[in-house]
Amino acid sequence: MSITTTTNTVIKVAIADDHKIFRKGVILSLRPFNNIKFVQEAENGQELIDGLGDSLPDVILMDLRMPTKDGIEATKLIAKQYPAIHIVILTMFEDERFVSHLMEIGANGYLLKSADPVEIRRAIMEVFEKGYYLNNFVNRILLKKSHAKQKVVPNLNSEITLTDRERDVIKYICMEFTAQEIAQKMDVSPRTVEAIKDKLMEKFGTKNTAGLVFYAVKNNLID
Image (cartoon, rainbow, N blue to C red; front, side, top):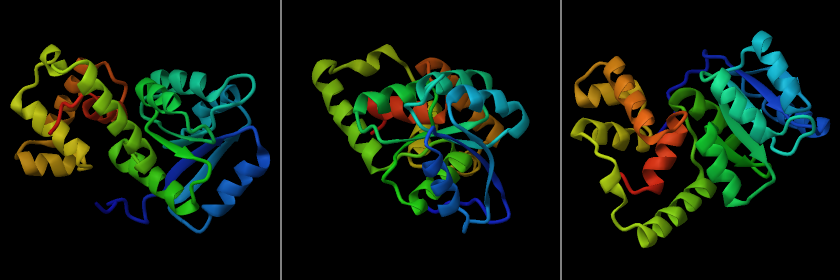
């Protein structure tokens, strides 16, 4: 599905990484995309958090291993204090435990540092537009966890009851439709869609849309 964000929409981005050369490389590689503007650089999670009040980015590219405050601690705090800011993890760690934990505590996407500029740009735009970004790497982890859950807990869905409308919303969210597009498909207002999404996040105990999708797929709540 194509991204509906127009080139006229400038997405403000912050990057936190303790390697200055890597930070500068990411910024330079994304310079050709004129709808992305870097508003903050930080060498660690604490420096990032300290500057958010002034920079107010839409999206953060977050490394995990950093001094003073690492990316896991920073993600948890930012998701709580600045829920409107979307966080894309950009790291060398391929361990699926990191992916699961970060998505569940508030990250909106997870990229490896081997990602090319086009994918980084796509992740930025998708989390800005839809609230999450799931690439093939994350999808493989989701699929693996989904199969594992089926073996261990065959009747997991019995603990959570969903209405037909809630099932429709979660289905469309997982199909990567925006709230506006879901509203049109369901013949309801976008505000109603957002209210249903908020209710689903409350039921699942998730922090954002990415966590909602992660939980739904992992626990086989959609067909």
